[in-house]
Length: 269
Image (cartoon, rainbow, N blue to C red; front, side, top):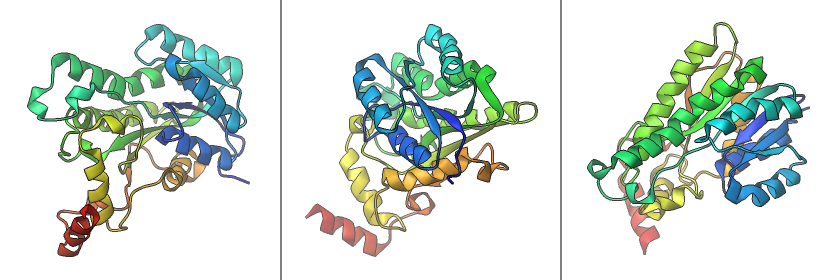
């Protein structure tokens, strides 16, 4: 019997099989959960096929920048499930030109877009879905180390992720006392997703992570999924407002060892 047996959840943010949301969805189903999926219009057929692979026909359109879609989301959930036990928010966006060069060149429009889609959407979506969440529901979102430290070319997304992590804390404080809803984040190591492909020199980030992280490797979706299911399950009933690092230990490093630098040079040959 899986740790999510009998639980129902909504997965928001799948684009393809490389998406972090897909890795989490697979792990949730493996642990017994029943899932609904949202899609953006360009990805509808792809998301429907992925949902079918996991035995779900519960798919509906949801653009987090569209207030009408947010208003409609609880109706879609109620029609399909009645109420849900968890929400996975794996949504982020920034203009490609903002993810290279200097942060000081961030545009007003680029800043608004990144903060709206990547941070405010967690607040807006959680609020919209409150009427169809169980009292002990769990909300999980995805962050990255760029929220805490300067990552070259991550730029405005780092600021957006910092806002996201802060939002997790404030939402946890709001929703814990009465609703009993927990809100947490996973700070994921770099993964080759559709969003990550827009970050300048992302290949070098992966090489550096592989060479210098304590577990000497890059994160896979199969490694991330189990932590997500733990945070969505009753096993983490006393955990809220947390950002859990799942990044091969990279976040603890202050500088690379000489051995790690040598390995990096060997990788570049």
